[in-house]
Length: 164
Image (cartoon, rainbow, N blue to C red; front, side):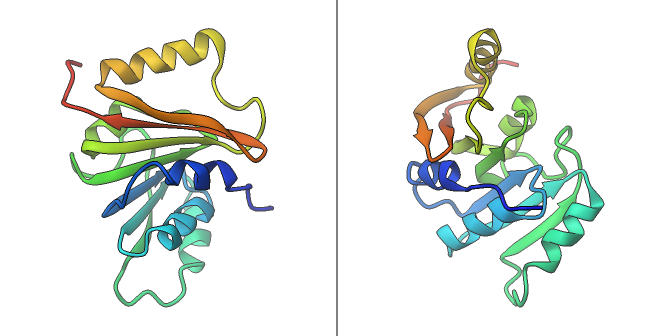
């Protein structure tokens, strides 16, 4: 399996400051999570994936990590196996966004990155407007979006808690 091009994730990361705790949802073999660990060397990075084989493959790629800065866990995106308000940044690459769960585990003021590594993968039209409304209902505010490399990205910030 070839690694996805991470240009959209890299472009989005420029708009999130310096997070302390990062989660990648449906992390696969860890490409995105390991990129974010390199990009934000002071952050603790977690990856979660529903596939045990993917979690094992990602964990094998960590190497020596005496501080436990990067770790992978098996779990579904609904529910995410983490407590409320745990992360400053949540990244979702080429997957559906579990909006309610991301809002739950993200601290107020934290960011959500949605990155699509191939043209046409981002939700558009009615589906895109539906997702934007769901994000807004949960208190997310747009920060930046654009095309990057072969894909696209969007960054939103969680404001105060909205009504569910």
